[in-house]
Length: 128
Image 1 (cartoon, rainbow, N blue to C red):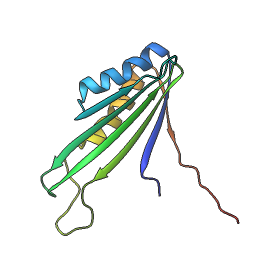
Image 2: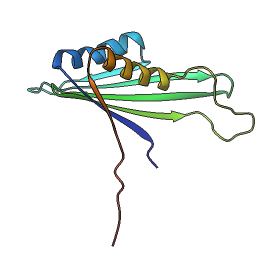
Image 3: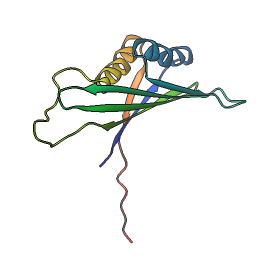
Image 4: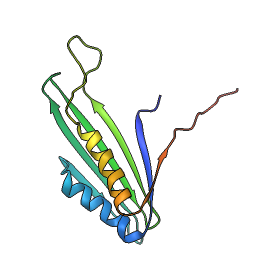
């Protein structure tokens, strides 16, 4: 079972660089960490989004890791928290932070002519 979602976004370097900045201004994260290795044109962003779901009395956290290189952006989304399967808990009818971030990625890519590919988890087979 895969617990995270990975997107690869391909396109022009200038547009790929704008994508992360636009995401963080449109949907401001609770915490944001940026790392740029010396002598490299790569940027790594780690953003943590948190929202409280009042209906189920729990908080949901979305960690968004963006590895930005001149050729592509690799976006890893990992959702944690919340409650499933307890009495009275139901899926919220309101849009959650994960849906907003995914919609932003797809909309931005479509608007600026980028190519989005969802990376499928590889099935590791142990034959020994």
